[in-house]
Amino acid sequence: MNLVSDLDLPAFDYAEPDVPADRYHAQLAGIRQHGWLAKSPLAYLVLDHDAGEFFLRSKKTAFPGRQIAGFFGVSSGPLAEHIDANILNLSGEHHRRLRALVGPALTPRAADRWRPVMRGFLADLWARVAAGGGCDFVAAVARPYPALTIATVLGAPPQDAGRLHAWSTWVQRQFDIRALDASRDEIEQAVTEVEAYVTGLLEARRAAPGDDLISSLLAARDQGDRLSAAECVQLVVNLLAGGIDTTAGQLAHAIRLFAAHPGQWARLAADPGLAPRAVDEVLRFEPVTPFTARICLEQVEFRDVIFPAGTIVAVCAERANREGGGGEGFDITTTHAGRLLTFGAGAHYCPGANLARAELEEALAFLAPRAPGLALDGPPQLSGIEGIYGIDKLPVSWPGTSAMSPNHGRAPNVS
Image 1 (cartoon, helix red, strand yellow):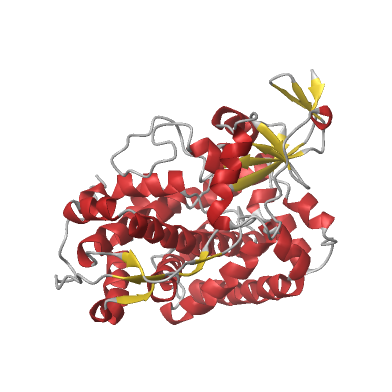
Image 2 (cartoon, rainbow, N blue to C red):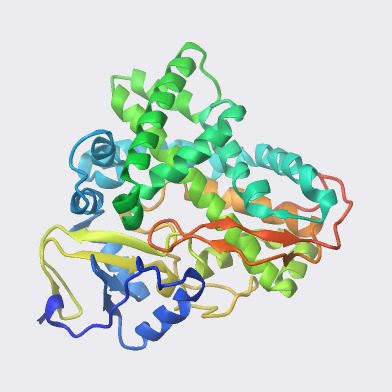
């Protein structure tokens, strides 16, 4: 057995400004040739699939949100309280109880019932840009679409979607070590504002219940006090924060990838029923969360390496996902044998994964037949890879704009 700290490991600092997002794949591929482990300033990087699954599923590890925040002096105040109550940072019976309460609202069947709403939003957004033959896809579609969807799922007014997206972007930066260092005040302000907003939304839904997730949570709260008021607020904030910025980034990456692979876009346009496989390939090839951290709660031994208690590891979904079928190529017809780690694994597997998949499937099935000739119309502005790996600007064009009706095209088979 060897202590992980005694190993001679290659280094990769994903927070350094000289690690460009558009070239980090090649850098990680080069490091992976030296083994399954690497080191960074805060964590050891786990670069293969089996090791990633082990650390994500182990009962000896947990999400290190509190510890990472502590490194940057976040030990009190609204942000510290939010991090402490975040479902990601909970474990044991408390975590299982909250997951069980929110789970029924986020099953595949529950997500499917919102697909007609998603198509309506896509039709409205597309109608604003279709005739122009080009747009900044992030501003026109990727950013507003998931915000409108989450607003509807939660029971929030659609006119609040813009604010919801802004809050989601800032709150999600609690997982970005560079942002925690440079923008703590802005993150804390967003947490304070969104919690006040959700509190008001809960009061409104209690007075006038609807067919939405918040009304379901309120019903659970009223059944034997199974859900406290504070827990209810935090669950909604977690779903709001985790379900907008991530999906927006993943959809933008999907369009960027298809613009670079016109043959794949044409194949999807000819058969929109391939959308579920297309989404799988996008999630595999360009995960919007390239790294997922875990802290060892006690000594962990794996592959003759000792990870002492307190060691932080970062599971690299980007490398793990590329080990199976497909490798370094992008092909929506490829069949993948292994589980993707884009949404994590184990007890903290992303609760909103089914809703995100449905949103992405509907968007790709809708857009591919309507934007033949999709191409980049300028360089994308990529965000950093240390938190949510999104796209700030994505200029695209579609010189062969289709005049088909909004309802044309076969939707994915979700039966």
